[in-house]
Length: 332
Image (cartoon, helix red, strand yellow):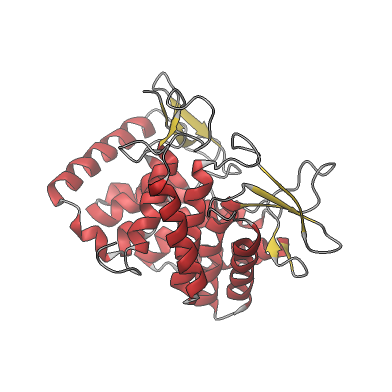
């Protein structure tokens, strides 16, 4: 069976803060974990030795032939590699990993000024957020706050959401993708770090609007909701990366569960917790979910079981579930 690796193993650690802060992580077998960390560390040292160290050569994933795929700091995945280094350092306390994390994180800093993307949470929280939690570096805190100030410039108060994309303007007026739920964590952090409630308010409203407009009756999510800028109401509900407008793109379901779990943890709003659990029920009860729980790239892809599977969707879902486990009864 062919697997779609997407973001390689980097996503497992860089996407979520749960590995450093969640009590449930303690159930992971320590010996197994150490072996995996040693494997990852060796791989990263090997790859890094072959790289030109700059903001144009940030590791992203592996090509099918096993060679390294790199990207620049502007790419939405640029924070994942330095974030993974921070995660590994958090576990191992190996100074060489910390030194590498500092170097690679520095290449992403300029993205705090990019007003043309909603992906600042992906980029900044993954590395600066992880680094700050470990080191309490005041400079890192300032980067998180500035990136959040940049991100909320994309917020439309009338519609109640942060704009996702600026392109395709001839077709869309104000597109918002379910992925954007992943960027709210940085805004919640910014309010905690700065004392300014504006970031919390924007994140909270975005989550509420997304909850109201992005989900079908079966609790699967649309990928893209395009809003009318005059009325503030949805005008299109479509997909850009899924199989069809009415299909359930698997990574989108994972973005939603992780995002609403985080939103509940930061706000205490029970409607967010309810939605996160409903997304989980949809995922686990879907007849097209394989026994190993790694989904096909879209739950409604036409050639299942002969469709690629999405490991990144599974890792995001797993990460969200680790946090969600704190908020539901033990038997769940």
